Amino acid sequence: MENNQQQANDVMEIDLLELMQVLWSKAVIIVLVAFMTAVAVFLVEFLAITPKYTSTTKMLVLAKQNQTGLTSSDLTMSSQLTKDYVELIQTRKVTEQVIARLNLKNSDGEPMTHEQLLSKMTVTQVTDTRILTIQVEDPDPYLAQSIADAIRDIAAVHIKEVTDVEAVNTVDPANLPTKTSSPSLLRDTAIGGVVGFVLICGLILALHLMDNTIKTSDDVERYLGISTLGTIPMESSTAQAQSSRKKSRRRSSSSYPGRYSTNLSGGRT
Image 1: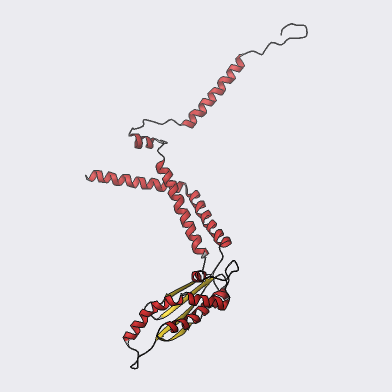
Image 2 (image 1 turned 45 degrees about the horizontal axis):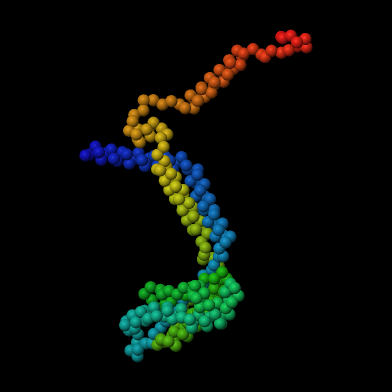
């Protein structure tokens, strides 16, 4: 039993070593494919994808306090209601007022729709707080900043109208982004190179495992279970055969006399 298990382990080690040797023999191809994939991803994102900037602003929603002061239950209730405020910020009433105030247009020159503005903005709640974060992404950094500020200001009024809150204060005004948020050229280029590396390695291994042709004496023993007594070098034998054929042709041509030639008198020479 132990011998069988040891043999199985030996076979597995030999197979893994063989696969590593196959990959190593194709190392140049693997490196070239990974490099070309990374370059392709870089060129596509650099030339075809418009860079975008993200502006961020934060606001704090304060619920009305009791006469006895702010209690722990008030804090808990305010934290739970913050999820409602997230939804209120993304309502059509807020987005349509932002579009009208800034006269926002889409790529076709038409007034921006509610859905198009929603695709630019992200509203999240800072964990275990009453602070809301509003992020706006746009190819124009100045426009991203203006939209974020407008959403915060209009949403603050809308929240106070709909809910019973004391105030909505600005924690951080919208910043003017100086670096692009997407696409990330370095990250995506690295991912493209890794994906190309994995794909070419998988393709090489798949072709190797599906190839059941016999090439060496080891393949004969592995696939047919027959021991080989010896091998004949095909290249040297072929060269010898070609050389012998050339020599035989030379001998045959030298053994035949030249054709008869006729002189002017009609005699043979």
